[in-house]
Image 1 (cartoon, rainbow, N blue to C red):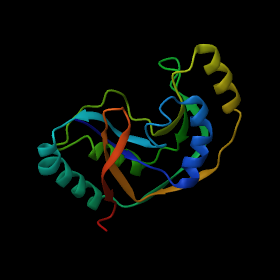
Image 2: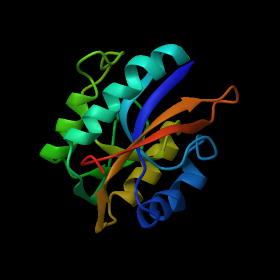
Image 3: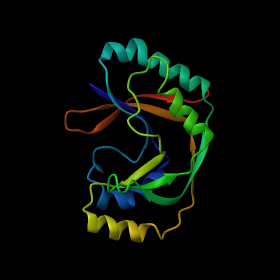
Image 4: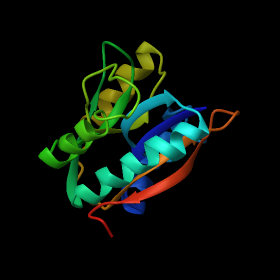
Length: 171
């Protein structure tokens, strides 16, 4: 089964992201707005219960809650026509990402970690240019706190669901 690890932002940040996603993101119905901390990886339930969950609990216990800001949009162009809310990079979010890619956890990084919340993807070139052009003129001032991350699993229809939540700071 496919699993992944993500941070779900507060309702305020999710509402802002969804105001764009419902129009520009074909994955809108499959997963709420999120920051991907670990790309999808394959594991069986035995491995999840015996190896991965204990490792994730340890990481969560050793990681203090932190905050981040979102001030603008950016894109992965020219690689893909994906537009996202740019999460202001912090030491804490990069440290958590590194921990989630170390030890006995499966999966390698396919790309350099760019903390973001996708708001548009799979756009045609002309549409991408128009949407990115108008969104890049907007200023955002979103502040959010992270006190947990989620282990997700993918359903047969492509949707993602929470398998377990891990609270930061050993709460």
